[in-house]
Length: 186
Image: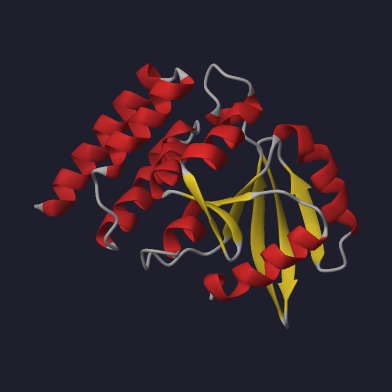
């Protein structure tokens, strides 16, 4: 279970001096039973190269693969491996510098928890709608709604887009998500 692995992985990362914010399904899973299959962590762009070097030499990490917007790896927890993705903030900062996204989420849209800083649910939805392949993430948003995540979070995702100056891009995507949510409710 991913939430069982999260504290172990976060403790290792803090021990390695890696700063992160838990995002994605693991952030939602703390409140809603969505059934995520991996752990997503956003890291500052300024730290991205150093984090990748630390991961490549970490004894509990294997198969670090950087694809530009994120680096995936396998993290050993006990006797099994967990899929962990380190996301750089480029795609989410809109018209602001990449690290503005990390600072904003840390300051306004997250909370400090036992595993470190965890993003608010609206950040997860904003991120899902901000990526180029956002259409496939609408299915995850629908899964989240079925698990009890309130559709009103789409309005908060738009607030984030407003802050980053990319509302014009995100608003049609939010409309599409709302349309699918309405169809789901029928």
